[in-house]
Length: 356
Image (cartoon, rainbow, N blue to C red):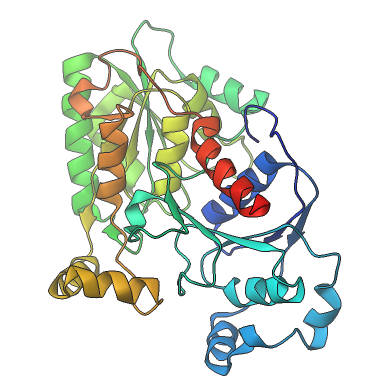
């Protein structure tokens, strides 16, 4: 939810996305706008999406079971993320006589033109357009902290005056490899950091974290780290680590995790990972195209720029929200980001859309 009440309220249909991070952003944006929100949990398969695009389904009204689900009264806004819902969003807008406006989060995997607004972030490298707004971080606020999560963290930490640094571990992604080499490099970085600062580390793994990553950290760091592997019968300490540690170090594979860390208001450092070969190859191929060609192809939905998470890290660093690891404990963040500061320009653009 946003940190202040929105000045206007609208009805929104949220066409659910398959990714958890995208889904949280949709929920955040819908809640910030206020008004009636209808989540639509149907997610078409990739095959169905390709079939609909090739057959020109966006130009036809709904048929079959969807004709019973998508009925008036039509919403003011259709909120989507990714490419799976673009066709249905366009059909809803057509059925509304053009009154319903389509707002896409992230990258649309489709042509820009049919969308009323695209809310993107730096890692997607979308070229500018009249219907594109880039905000510096995804709309992923830190999760609420349960008493049990906070107590689990408190019980695990030794009583000492050392600063605590939460280490948030991701895993393999489409862009990065989190293999044995990456684990060794992270362990070496954190060992040097602990030796120079005397900090106490609190490391949380995620479902994507490779087997053995926490063991490698434990063997390298000795008694200077408290490690939390996933536990089915215990509260996840992750929200408490975000809320209660003095600073945070996150692996560079997740935009959502970086956003949650930065929006905690704590100093944040990024632990870099090695890019996959295919990611480097995709960027190299894109670099062969003239800039104007890449821009045109992207706007027509015929080219998708490779994700560039270091660009997101650099933007966050330029705002003072991310620091080098060796400066992580230099003091508080002077102007930390807030969810409201990210939402305000988006809300303004949406209000302009609805009042045109």
